[in-house]
Image (cartoon, rainbow, N blue to C red):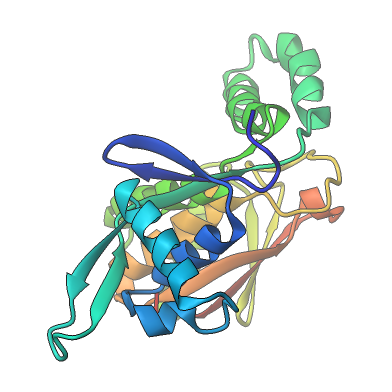
Length: 244
């Protein structure tokens, strides 16, 4: 069984669970771009030899790769070769049980049934103690890039108006644009979710990011800051410039 601190990465060899906090910190550093050994060691408060062992372990697992620095042959540069897609967590089955209980009443209403089945899959992972938020966000980005072909605007302000209409027309929610925030009411992803003290709409984050990036070329980070999962009656997404 995975403990609550395990993080999961997808590699060419399959899924790798990383439990070491130091290894996790190294991998998250590399998620922002390649780093030298010195850059990796910064703020980790571990001996050089200890970090070297962790780097060797990660390379053997297929999570990172090493190469010689092009500007200084004496240095080694490390980069991430895996995708972070989830972490273990304390199982949360309150919403999952509620969906199962109401699933029968969804029969005969295709929209309600599809929504229930989507929620069943999404929160089924939570009930098993697996947070797949990172994977859903990445899938959302891919979906957003594909859906971007349905939009015309290349100007962010106008594109957000199109996204608002798209969300409403496809019953994904009612969007209200408020400066750098998107407020989403009747959210398809989390509507009716009990308060579990965390945001859950990773798929929506990724979709909006993907659409914006594909249409405007702008690197905009979309992060949910309020949600049904945090006890609110609507979702709130913050948009900000991103170099990632």
